[in-house]
Length: 109
Length: 115
Image: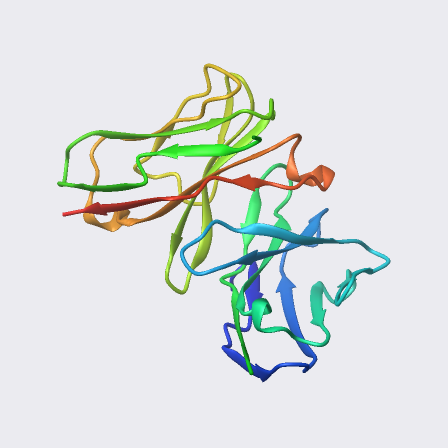
């Protein structure tokens, strides 16, 4: 079993749609959680951290469920510019970083 | 401008020819890390460093070496490259370790092909 698992997609959605991604992790000792965004062949960039109480940043909402060991990302009112790969990132215990394989999103006009 | 730089950006080499990919950051970050990215596998951590002279293995360290003699530099060394090391490599840095919810800043990537 992979330490961090994501649905690879792709998710094809129309502009204005709401789309949700989930990510599960296996190490219950994980301390910190993130969503990164990666455009084709570019470097990953932080989208948002994921806190225990859940957090929101504009159209993006992240949730953490420690009991079930999953995190989620909700994107509301999708824009064409949201088309990218979304990477779930987990602190793997200590100072290791574990990335999920990513979920591809295509937003169409 | 705050940034992480990597060189070279593209490299084609042959099996067994030693190479070094350089990584440098100008943000005075303690934490630096190397990843490789392969289709369907995502980014996998090769090595990381918590500070000068402190390094540790990630998930896929075999065939790689690193050093951290200065805070700003974290070179990745392939002593005897093999075709299975063909990949896209990213260097990243962070103010502190990831466990402190600090953002990692990534370099632009190095695309390596080993023939």
